[in-house]
Length: 102
Image 1 (cartoon, rainbow, N blue to C red):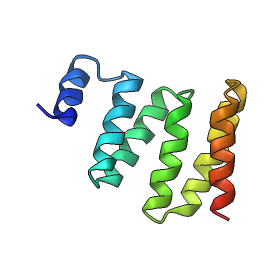
Image 2: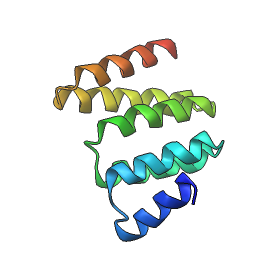
Image 3: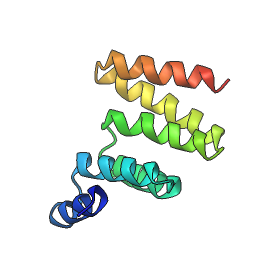
Image 4: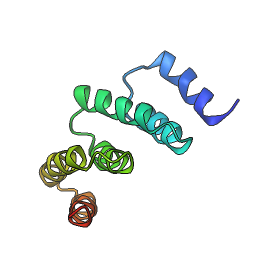
């Protein structure tokens, strides 16, 4: 069973697990299915808006598909979430990526 299938099986048992949804989004995006990854991260952030890594990855995926306006908006929100969570590393990464988008 490949990683994607394993994650899907785990998600059947716990469909709202933030880490499993994040991991699944990373796997499918890594397989070139960026829109599926974007959709899953958006869904994840609806029920767990404090899941800091999802903000950064969502912004990156949006930029990869050419939606830089959405990527900027996502990163601005993610920076605020990271700041409130005192996650200076994630905040700095998102800030740097946001600046690279111009």
